[in-house]
Image (tube, rainbow, N blue to C red):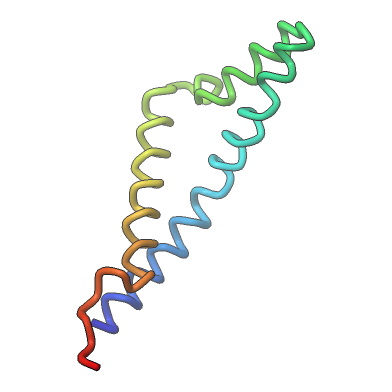
Length: 91
């Protein structure tokens, strides 16, 4: 059991490092986009929308799927590290 937890901790750490920049970008653009739309700045809004959706990098579908799968991996490894689903120890 300790080996599995150690492996999940390693994968969780690696995934978090890889996904930091895309998630940070999505968060910042998600905050800035409504603000720029409220200020009626069309050029900045369009750029932020493209960055937020991944369209700026070529394929928004691949970007979204990879970020979604990465988040799913972080969720699974993170939940396994909490110990909520481990065996119950006898008292």
